[in-house]
Image (cartoon, rainbow, N blue to C red; front, side, top):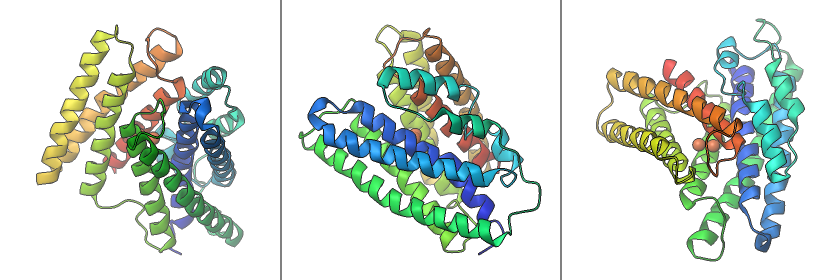
Length: 296
Ligand SMILES: [Fe+2]
Ligand SMILES: [Fe+2]
């Protein structure tokens, strides 16, 4: 095991473990009574990823970097309220204590990462993540297949299902890299940028599609972001230059501000939409994560 194994693994689970637990919640909330068994399976994954996240948080105190804790990618100032409101709207229980624990996390003290018992606990966590991800990826693929062949209805767009499959696969690849003793969690800079620019473009498209038809000004802003990311993606596919990184960072900072205003407006009931508060916070955290990657 390389020297950053413990820290990198825990940082990955703090961000992506929470993302998977929330995907499971969005899936569960999107089914109709006709698909009760699918809702049950989504709840199973929600609980399992909640447990995995809770274990990662307990192990991470005094281990993870200040950069991660400052990035607002594992939790934002809006997460606690977004969870309370989402629990109330959906009836799906959310363990708010994990969020409180995350807000209290302290950064690396410089000691403790090498403890053999901590390394063993992290290794176990990585194995659990891998097997849970295998299950969740095939579950998501199964839902998408059913929707595409007209056998199932869910309020989640087919593109959103595809999107959450890609995010789960990236998480799985990252855990696998760590387990193969590679010190890089992420793929090449160009692949990372293409991946996340596409994710950001799709967020803009989802926001556009889930806003109330009367929110015309916000439609325009969301359309512009989708368009800008689409242009960056085309550039990204052709050539990768240092300027690319700057363009992606500049656009994503603007998009982060748009998403911040979005989550505030949704939590305060000022924006009319079919967006769950936790989904608004979720896409904001993904932008914060991408910004940290771009800053290097
Ligand atoms: Fe996501
Ligand atoms: Fe996403």
